[in-house]
Image: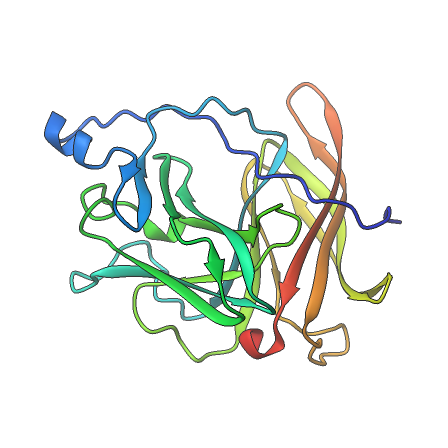
Length: 256
């Protein structure tokens, strides 16, 4: 049903133009993309990179009671935080972005130790002036070659201890009918863990979730996983095939 393990598609960034219709020129300059000491952050006025039919937006680790559900930060919130798990020391790529306003945050730090890692940044500089709907923030943490993703949790206060799940977000240009499965890498082969079917009638943001369990409800051991999907996307003028393979690290301790 699926081809051999291959390199996943690189992030396809949706081109957009941002108009800051409210606020003064000084405010607009204040939220513009620039170096802010420990990170690059701000709004990029235009980004001429074409997207595809079905693009990966974010790979998240979240809880049912996620602090960012509802889209608005509490008045007392001073930082946003991301945490992720690395099986070994790694040079990583971290991208936090919101496609509609073309907000971006990219830390200077690239090298991290093994285990649970985190990065925090203040919301007063850009996030709050933009009135950014933080529940629409997308996070991608990967190795430097973008061949393995590390699911990241985004939170504004101490994360919940509730059982977590993985969430993969995609921007779809049309309705889709896809068959997919989560696979576990075991040596040089892949073992099927949990199949699913994804049917959406309309374009927009589409989510695929996994609870870290196999089809029998047992915990899947830590290791490299693959989210694989194939099927059709229905565009206004044609139907196209989709065949995706997204490798990611599953850490049992982080997901349960």
